[in-house]
Figure: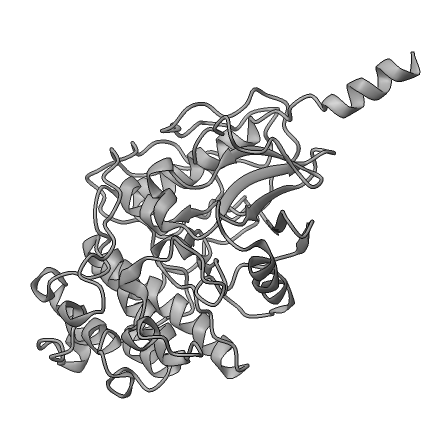
Length: 389
């Protein structure tokens, strides 16, 4: 989450922009401009997306409308599309979320293998549901994955179909790079393999030896140059991700067409930002924020804030372990009447991935900063008042 820049719009449709979702350094690998914004009544906080600079707004708007019509678990729930032909936008209800590159930056490096498996299972489940409806995502990349307390969300729907700049070249399947007319489910699986490689190593096209042994075969199969050598379906990949490698005994090297054989030697790299400190958190199960009346977001990195008190009844304090605790399940701080949720097992692919403590702290920091964000004074209302006088 970043401060707005001087060239960012202060108002998009009925929403006042509060902050950027993506770090400035990630601008070249994000096929959309994404903002955290709030309605003029102060009651709704949303994720607001607009086309990147230089994109064809009409093609972007077609994919945005397609995303609004979708009803696929694991895809961002686009609730509203608006704007003009030259400046379209879409909005989705806000939930605490970090783009995958920011999650790696908060953690301080690649994620643990178990977290990567659960993250991949959530993404594969969403792709399986979409493919069953005859829909391909065609925009999967590290920046398109939002890490949330309830599991990953897929954004940037149709970015490749719209020809948008910012799609990580390491996520582009060879057949698409050669000019294939249609984006296929096999191309989605290639992109998912690149995302898993990124989560596990910090690169979309890593060396085979950089991958954890338990993921080499799976990632290598996804990144096979020949679509026929990739997993047969997202559902098949989901089943394999849900079972730890030691349970299957298949921990050998990846296929010959593994990560090193991917289309682009450049690949993506993880943001090397300083890790965020582990601090007090909040109830990450709360997916909405009330209106707030405090100054605009502070400059990055945003420290986690302890928000509870008389003015913030919905955000109880939560303890987030420091660097000595390598992982933490998705935070949920139930009240007296709410039983503690059961711990997820590796085979329970439907459960949210266990988020490391520093990632939870970064999510808490983001939500606390938005809770404190004040809407800018509406200049149009002021002008109208002056005219009446």
